[in-house]
Image (cartoon, helix red, strand yellow):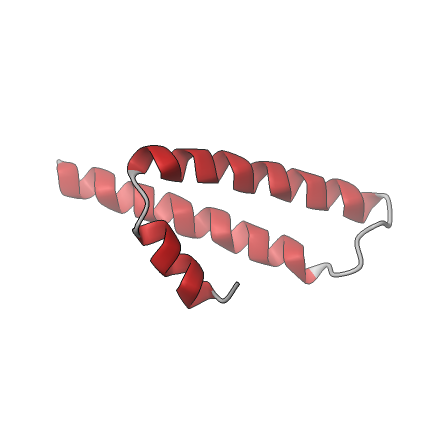
Length: 69
C-alpha cells in the first residue's frame, strides 16, 4: 500500500482503531525482525516500512491529543 493511501486510511480511523492498528503494526515489526534474524525474510525493506507506519500512527495519535487540549 502506498504511503498516501495508508495516510488516508489511518486519518479516517478513530483513536481506538488507531490504538489497535498500532498494536498490530508493532506485532508485524516484531515478526519481521524475527524472520530477518532467522534468514526467512526476503524483502528487508518491509522492516523499514513497518517502522515508518508505526511512526505515522503515533504522530496522528499525538496530533489528536494536542488538538483535544
